[in-house]
Image (tube, rainbow over all chains, first blue to last red; front, side, top):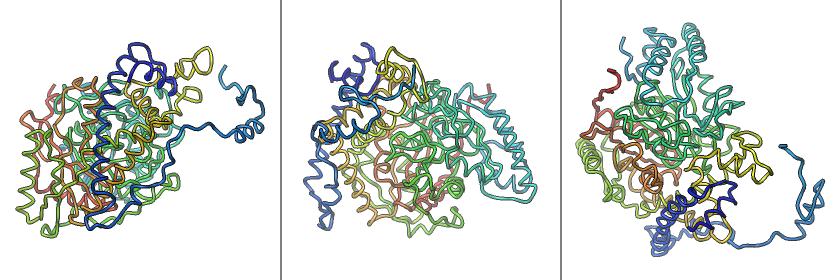
Length: 102
Length: 487
């Protein structure tokens, strides 16, 4: 994980991190991700045996449970329009909310 | 009267027979806390006045003839479990001044039953860790060697119990956070079947894995506490299990009916030789008693910690998103809303929380979910199935709790991966929502405790505890002295 990814993740997660932290987290998180590649081996092991149990009965329902496909999509424009219309104030496509901290 | 290291059952007998009062017992623990906790740093807050007041109330109930349960018994609770009117920090600067407006269900049930809360225990921040070094309020030390970690994340609870500051303690176990410190501190640590104990009022970390657990000196003690705190709760929809409690846990076991699986994957190359030797001795004792021990295989075990890491971090990043310093929590402020969020969260969270939030955010990011989160969920489902299959052949599994005994403070603090791997033998039962208990089974040559883990079928909590007690009775492990007591 390079500096840019760490900074992007920190921004997404609303965390301030300084340059020193970026360097340390980059190294540490990369090591963790490297270890997590073992999930690929687990998937190979699982696909080797398929969805069968020891007596050969299929159990694919365990595996193919309902997770939505991981696709990057823009929010439907009509839904955005409905939400903006329902908001008490909006500006440039954003909902304006009351100030909760001065 | 020597009150040192008494079990709940022993204390119960003394209270019910009026050989001691709850106030005397509470004072005994409070004095020890005051005198010795500077060595251990197991507790964050000690509520002297309230503990004495509640103990006096318990004595009144005892005087009226009430008996049994946890009436008048002093306990300590991990500081991520809400206690009305008392600080609940979750070990974090983020919640340093947070006072809960209500009690967790487990606390209100214990209050009603007359138990005496004496202190809130230290923990890894938001229960994120395996050494209790990640607390914003400083690390806890292992009572058997002050330069060693107590394990975690319920290290404060385990250390307090081992140091004889209470009769029992509560912790939370997401990927092993009760069993791990129990093993390193030489006490019993139990994780229930998911859904057996309400999580209402537990500061959420990874909701599909979190469980409130119990630390005590014996498995029978654990069962007694279960009798008070377990059961459905209208405030937690996942707390739906109704477990049938036996009339007594320390019943005689017919060993010839006991079938225990010995899973090869839990005895891999990273296992310390002294831990392996202790397990071997237990195996021989069980065989001598007439139990059947079968070698079994759980091939996906070694991938449990990877699946756990992904699911845990994804859920951590979601659950900890609520801590923004606006409604409550640490406030640094900023010139605009985004800067305020960044500053409040950046300064309020410690390093481990930040690591997990960032990785969790990564796993849940569009385009990354398929490569990590989905695989982790599939592996989790398959691990559950492996257990289900194995439990058609055996009734219990016996494994080491941790690959090694306690390690030195600071040794792994900059190497998060090695700390995650500490839970490698514990995460599979968590992922599969199974009951599991760690019991003390031996001592290393350096006088550090060694723990063994018993895993059972879902809902078989009391059977697991019955076997655990039977094994504790066979081993009859000698205690070790606490060197700082003589100072």
